[in-house]
Length: 108
Image (cartoon, rainbow, N blue to C red; front, side, top):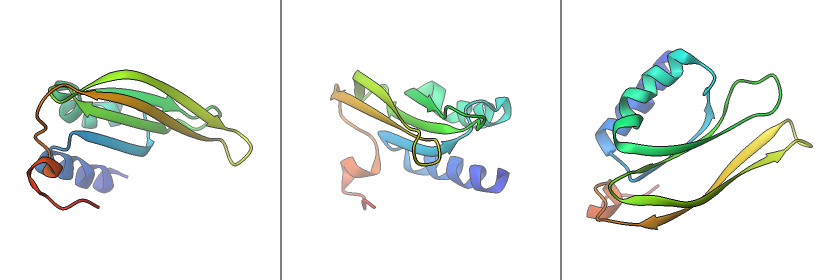
């Protein structure tokens, strides 16, 4: 998974989005946290919802500290369909964003 993660990290550095959502985020892996931590921790606050079984991954939602603040969040488990999870967040705008969406950039 290293080439995929490197490509994701490169895209995060290039785009500098205000909000980042990642599924299959391997939060239990120290190497994974180091790779993403160098990018996310300085500029982003985040929540992580781990899967509940033997899997070491989950969902991560991160937001730019200078643009948004967390109002509330909730993790959600869907155990009847393969141990799936979700993370719901409510954010408040506190400043001008610096991501692609704020300057007319393309949205997915």
